[in-house]
Image (tube, rainbow, N blue to C red; front, side, top):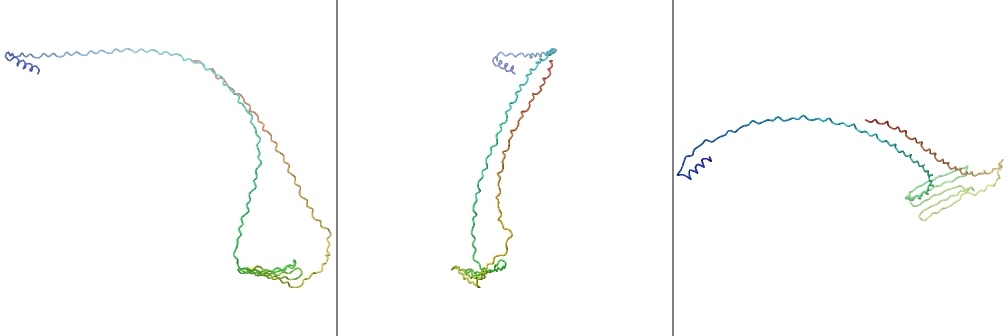
Length: 229
């Protein structure tokens, strides 16, 4: 394509003298192909060196006998127990609080009679009351054979009594007893018991006997010599 463009330009410059260009077939050189040269790789046999083995050096361990310190024994200190006398506190007593109970007046009535010839007891008593007034009477045989009768009344105005006697007083003559005791009676003699103060023996305290433990040194056997390689 470039070739034809050059020819046209040339023809335009020299129109008068135009000569047909000679066409020459292009020269084509076929490329030369050279077969690749293959060189076989050079292989070197590896060199193997036998490792040098050195026998290990063994050093005999140094053994130091252990240092043993005998334990120091301190004798125990014994302190006598301290005894404190017990403190006694007097108990506090509070007097009980008593509240008097009052009851409303109620009507009532009662009566009783006693007669006992052996003790020469002979009396009777009766009493009754409404809400406001109390009336009653009692009768008793006195030692002089008279009978005493008392009639009483109690109300808002106070207590009043009417005393009467029945019968005559009799005093029998004194007759000495014919009975005589064969033996005189002596009052028993009382002897107060004798109190012996208890004998207190303080307990004997024996200090504990302490025996120090017998210590035996451990039997140590040295290890056998370790062979060298």
